Image (cartoon, rainbow, N blue to C red; front, side, top):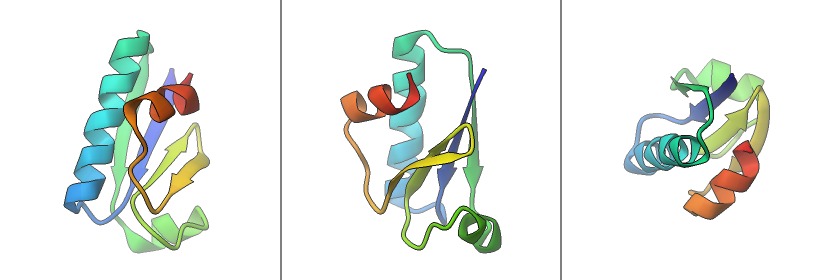
Length: 77
């Protein structure tokens, strides 16, 4: 099961990233768990200084922007 974490305060871009990430996982037929990390201390422990960010199985894949659906599919597959 993939652990997908959206790091951010809950802003519109964070919500968009969460929605796109869930869609990408469904499109790929992955078993996944999505977690929204909003605690700034926890976000900083990932080394992330700009949000939104996406971590896959604990590894940060993108920071400071919302990637396209196709980019997310590549990151999580």
